[in-house]
Image (cartoon, rainbow, N blue to C red; front, side, top):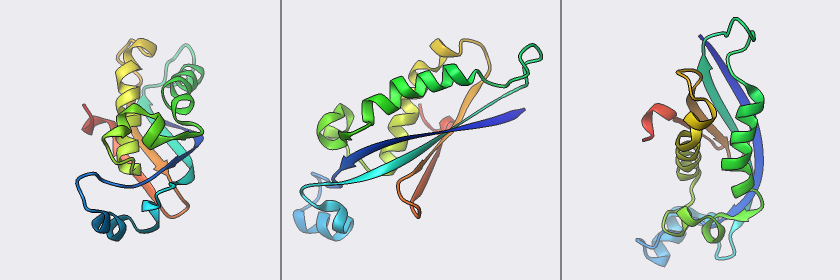
Length: 144
C-alpha cells in the first residue's frame, strides 16, 4: 500500500468571529484574528491518498486527475477569496483552519468517486498549513 501526498496552495482572507459569542468573547478568544477587516494567509494544503501499486502504470494514483479535482473543488473556489463573504458555507460557520480542513475534505469526498470510480485510490487525509507554526490535519475517514 502506498501513500501519495500532493501539496497545493491558495491565498485567502478571513475573520474569526462567532455570532454565538459576544464581541468581547470574540476578541478574547480570537485576538488579532478577530480584526473586523479580516486578515489573510497563504495556505498550503496537502492531500494524501492511499492505494496499491497498479502493475500496468506503476503508480498508486493518477496525479493529473487528483490535481484537476483539487483545482476544481479547492483551489479555484478559495483562492483570493474572503472566506466569510465569498464562500457560502462560511456564512454561518467560523472559517477556522479546522473548519476549512473539514470543508476541503467534504468537497473532495463528494466528487471522489466521479474522478476515481474504482476501489482505489482512497482519500486518506487533509493537512493545512496556515502559518509556519499552525498546521491542521483531518482524517478523511472521520468526515461524512
